[in-house]
Image (cartoon, rainbow, N blue to C red; front, side):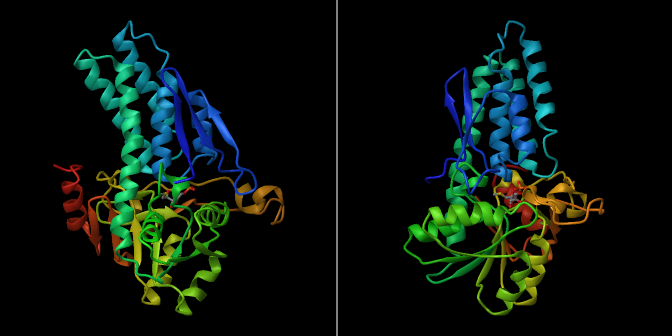
Length: 353
Ligand code: MRU
């Protein structure tokens, strides 16, 4: 993959280099992030975004916060790790990968503390594992999802669940990249994805970079292209999946799922097991981030609504499991997801006992 969304530079001490996604597609700027506070800001402002990439960024952010601790007082070290994790966890509320990665780092610190092993060294290893495993998982999701695509398929996608949202091939775009590697021709329609235009700015950009045939549409055109029979399948990512298979993803995903069902087009969600939240029973319990009014009323610096108008800006919505044809995970396809099938996949992946 040509796109390096984020990476750890150097050893210990080291820092994070990431693409500033707020500047794409106009400018390709690499930021050097050296402090946990700066990483928190990057996640909050969507400089780095997309559930799996947020998880990796949080793990690296924790390293930035604790890498120079001396470890003379080991109890204090674990306390500082937990403090830093609690701080990073406030960056965004919906993508569960953020909390998943931070919990994994804290668990590692506690384990090494109890085993009298060097705590910070362990955290370096854990963060590297989270990064490397995300790359492998993208490839596996890609291989499984590519089986749903034939030569000549056209896919509709929403938001950006590609390389820019992960450490490698992405989730929803991974099957498209793998299908291309297999010699299949796959075309993509990308919803622009108001209000922050992740589809136009990021998906259209990275697919163009990869030489994939992509057509950009505004969100309100999705119904039209589905009605016209232009789409064989919808592929989207996820920010959090409840135990019953309800899926939280970028605002507008639910509308696409309804339109896909109405037009008899399969609707697939591609997500790693780290995006499932077994503590959440149903979609309505998933916390939905609300963002500032300016994203809607003056997107990208130009006022497009009257001053003072009331704005509602939920960043995500929930698609009920009944509208989902399947969830592509690294342990296989969960067809027509429900609680039983989701739990079986989570058991296969070792998430549930
Ligand atoms: O607000 P964003 O840009 O972080 O939202 C991203 C999405 O909704 C993605 O579809 C999701 O995180 C999956 S990324 C593989």
